[in-house]
Length: 338
Image 1 (cartoon, rainbow, N blue to C red):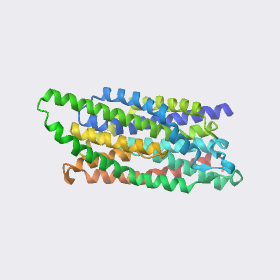
Image 2 (spheres, rainbow, N blue to C red):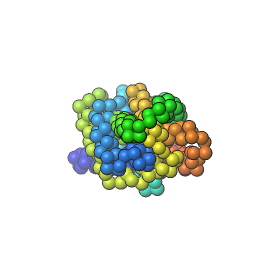
Image 3 (cartoon, one colour):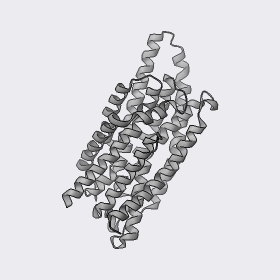
Image 4 (cartoon, rainbow, N blue to C red):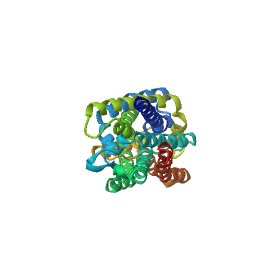
């Protein structure tokens, strides 16, 4: 029975990471593909390579936060490793919501979905099995929530600054061939940087529960590296199989993008997300790139940004942690036979 539950947990973790590939891979190359700077095949090759690098090298930072610091038991024990069915419920809840959003072509946050699902599992354990002593750390959640608000604003500001800074020197390049080569290099660097940040942030966040399930009661960096690699492979499968829908929304639905605008948006988002990862704070890569796209679009004027599209995406952002939390609680309720 224990081996069967472990297999189910791995499948559920694979499903969540697969969802990152289907939905959040657009955050890395959606602007470049939408601006017709990179072909779809070249774009997904960049995503797969650098996401796996980010997941293996730095995914452990958010893995510890989500797996160990949101729901805590007595003496620092990990309730999600003691009640594996609750962990599985959290993984499935996060995955189901992101799959639904992807089908509706809404770029939502897998990180927010996973954090919300972990909260739901923690609330269920504190209510249904009080003897375990599980408690949700609302202090940690407060820091994360503030970061969620700052994340898209920082990305928008950075993208705006980058576009303003790079536009004058690039305009001085009169050779069209040379200009195109420079822009291509900038796009590839920005896309690779965003993919790396996605691996470090989202893979770490989404596999935190998998780490908790397999006994993450203390730092086990070898286990973290293996789980990071596992999540990176699952994401690669998601990129190849089901990423076109959201990539179209990010690349063309918010503002019209040229090569320089795409670079500024990607790089602004990458720097923002990577910076939060250094503080072990899981933020939304989706929010960062949408904020960055909007910030870059504002250089052209407010009319260039689709307020209606941003409004729809904003509603999805608000719903994501709440829906994932409720779904995790309900699934956990069913799995525990309550």
